[in-house]
Image (cartoon, rainbow, N blue to C red; front, side):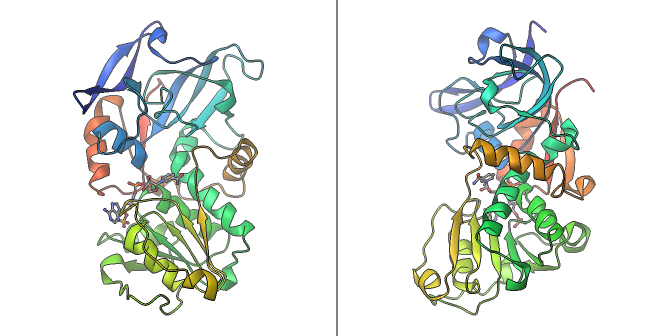
Length: 332
Ligand SMILES: NC(=O)c1ccc[n+]([C@@H]2O[C@H](COP(=O)([O-])OP(=O)(O)OC[C@H]3O[C@@H](n4cnc5c(N)ncnc54)[C@H](OP(=O)(O)O)[C@@H]3O)[C@@H](O)[C@H]2O)c1
C-alpha cells in the first residue's frame, strides 16, 4: 500500500485540528516494523488528543491513537515476520510516536506484543489500553494482598472503558463489585449484566469531610480522581488498596494521611503507558486466558470508522460514552 489514510493531529496557531489525510510511509516516524492496522479503539486520552481538550501530543503533526492491532507487512527485526499478528497498547504511540488511527503504522519492534493465542485482533482492541489498565490494577492489588474477604471493590466511572472491564475482571476472579456511576438508567441492562453486584449513584454519595468516615470498601478502582478519590481514601477498610487510574473528574487529590497511617490503606499508582515489558507480556497472557473478559458482546458498544472519529471523540469528552468503542480500519 503506497498511500494510506490516517487521522493526523495538527496544531495551527495553538488550536488543534484533526485531519483525515492520505499519507505515505515517509510521513511516519521511524520504526523497524510496518503493520497493516486492522483495529484500534478509543480511549479517553485519544478523545482528549483528537479534540484538543487535553495536552496529549508531544509534537505535531502526529497520527493519533494509543492502541493498534494488525498484521506485520514488513519487518527488519528478527522477532517478527510478514503475516504475524501483533498489537500495541500505550508505549507512547499516539503521543510521542505516530499512533494507531491509521491504515498503516510503523513502530519499533520493542513495543510490539505478539497477539496471544486465545484472542482475535478485534478482541485485543476491545480490551485495549482500557482493559490492560484494569488488569494492571488487579495485578497490583493482588500483589498487595487484596482478597475478596476484605469486602467489596468500588469501581468509579464504571460505564467507561476501564471501569467496564474492571467490573468484568474483578468479578471473574471472585470479588464482589459495587459500581459507582454518574449515569442514570444503566444499572440492570449494563452494569449488572457485566457482573456488578450493586450499583450506586455517584450523585447520592454522602462524601463527608472527616479524615476517616465509615469504612465501606474492601478496595477500589478509581477512574475519577478529585473529590471521589478523596472520599474513597476516607471510606476504604483497613489494609484495602485503591488503584488510582484516572482523572475524569479532576487531577487533584485533597485528603489526609489518616487513612494510610490509621487504617493501613494503600494508594497504588497505575501507569499503563510505560508498564515494564515482563509485566506487559504477563498481563496479556492473563487477559487471553484466565482473565479473558466474559462479556465482549456487552463491552463493545459500537464500531466506528476513521472518518467518524472526530465526532465520536467529542462525545467521549462529554462523558456520554458507555463501554468500548472499536475503530474498524482494515479490510476484514
Ligand atoms: N493510568 C493509566 O495508565 C490510564 C489508562 C487508561 C485510562 N486512564 C484514565 O482513566 C480514566 C478512565 O478512562 P476510560 O478510557 O475508561 O474513559 P471513558 O471510557 O471516557 O470513561 C470515563 C468514565 O468516567 C465517568 N466520567 C466521565 N466524565 C466524568 C466527570 N466529569 N466527572 C465524573 N465522572 C466522569 C463516566 O462514568 P460514569 O458515568 O459511569 O460515572 C465515564 O464513562 C480517564 O481519566 C483516563 O485518562 C488512565
